[in-house]
Image (cartoon, one colour):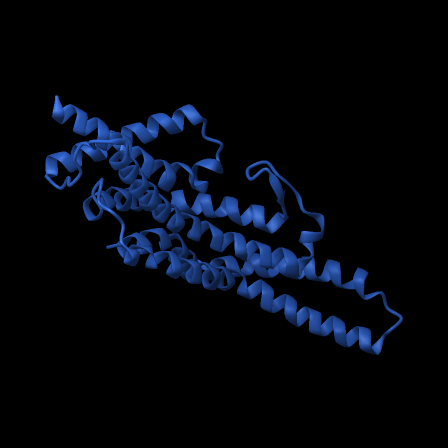
Length: 254
């Protein structure tokens, strides 16, 4: 009876970790996966992780004797789940930052439209790169590596084990990587549009009677789209590094 109660306890705690680390990420929100399907998927993964942990003898958690012990165990799983979610969000945030930079430079941010996924206003390039990130994540089979890394966390940090201060260091590293890789993805378009701004500024200086606003917007849109299309073939290494960010950050967790 105690073995079943321990398995049930570990399944519930593992479901908290997986809910925050997997279901709350853009991997599911981008496709509008129904809530019932998310619950079933989380419970299936959680029961599998609990069984593997108990069979491997790596379980350090015991049945909580009071509500305070249960709250501490749940709090630890929330912390680990948030740490897992940071890695996934970092990869997709890099594409979002790149799209935001492109939209600002190209002028698409002036006509932001309603994004049905995020329920907010999002410009063209931001929405396009967000969907492209999800597509590349599944096409490159990075989701399989991510699931393997998620289950590996149950070996590194068994259910009931507290997360130390050093375990949060990957969060700070992920924040730095997010901005650097986001700029690397958008760098060709941003640099080209900055050069276009210089050219337009020189022209407006020599021809002050020209309406620079109506001249620069179509030029920057066409140039930005052209450079984005050409640079897609050259962004393979950067894109691969972005998609591997969640796995790299989880590997650093001790």
